[in-house]
Length: 110
Image 1 (cartoon, helix red, strand yellow):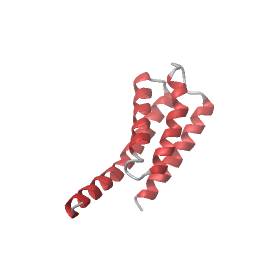
Image 2 (cartoon, rainbow, N blue to C red):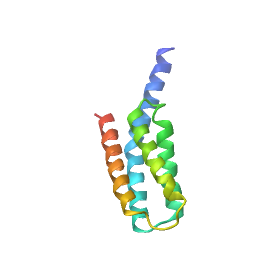
Image 3 (cartoon, rainbow, N blue to C red):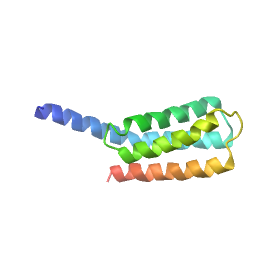
Image 4 (cartoon, rainbow, N blue to C red):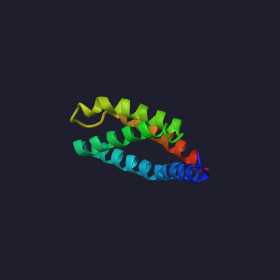
């Protein structure tokens, strides 16, 4: 592989990592909305962002980020079937996982 190609790939990986804090912020915002008032559109977006992170993180050598996002996605799937408020037990569990995800993302920028 040429040096130019390697540099482009390196920049692509860095660009992905640089985008992670914004994705984390988006998840936090959506989760906050869902806790206050269930909204099917926000729920679908939260699921989409989790799914996207879970799928893309491994490609960009961020396996821990992907694994945590996948855990959140799996837990949240059950709530997508409901139209009522998010159960208290799930609120704490997702908050904990979001915190873990945020810490994992922070480690990547060190």
